[in-house]
Length: 418
View 1 (cartoon, one colour):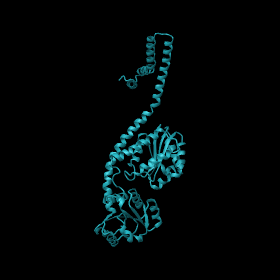
View 2 (view 1 turned 120 degrees about the vertical axis):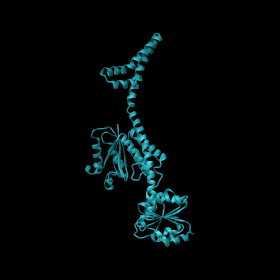
View 3 (view 1 turned 30 degrees about the horizontal axis):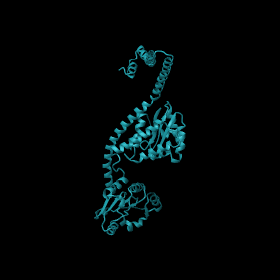
View 4 (view 1 turned 45 degrees about the vertical axis):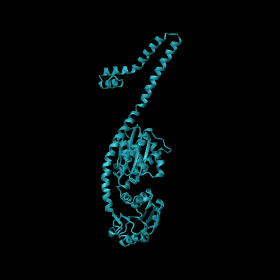
């Protein structure tokens, strides 16, 4: 049995190619059935995200197995092998084990240390286990991987610092306000960055969330997901005073929030402080707002400085995490190699037990016939010893006759003679 990892990711292929070999949720069960039906494939897990498609497999190794699995992947998605082959990577045994552990720990992610990938790996494993047979080795690998990822999170600071604009904006808010559960937040825009910010804020249970966007329908989709109120861009002036935190990211060529608008909001708030985080380029908030008392304005450049510092911290943590992965993957491979001896050990014990039963039966029969117990006991011990050492003795003699000193040493070591 061999463990394999076959895949394509953001490092090896552009999104246009990655999306062609992605497995959508509605085809995953069928894909797994098809994959597990391939010759020599004993178990499989399919991991498919926006940044990667990977197959983790336990197989009976064959010379042409890689070619057949690549062909299966391309045939299933109806893509040309020539288009995909140069972007694929192939790992086996220890490399496959350490690759999965690195992926689950966020060490192979587009954003170093991002936590979402562990949940995606867990879901991929759960999906593969639902209604599909899997090998015990693959199951053990994924369970081990989950514990390794947890250890990396616990023992290093790989996920402690904000390294995305959205996360940095939320981290900044948490630094200024003791608790986000008592604050009101206004998000301006409904693009990808604001979506991420909204999800982060929902996790921190903000008191109230408002979303202002030019297209109300797009904002409503996000609002339904995070439990927010939708307002129009034109309503910002009237509602700005309600917000303790304003985070803006639109594609507007001109500022949406001006100095006068913020002055009126501060007056309405009786000069309670406001945090304004302007992620947009061009800027959504007039720079002069930053000169107002009790208005704390941060631009995307300010956030980038935070991100750069935190990325350096994550890279240091990543080196610690790599050491953990190296140690854990080595231990797993030692366990896996030991499993290959289990059947041999079982057969050896069965053989010895049969010999014991046979000689014990003869000894009991002799005792029942009145033979002297001392004679029976001596004969049992003598015959049992001879029968048990017969095969090792022949192997030692053959190794000596062949002049095979290495084999002779191994035999002596296994018999505790060295």
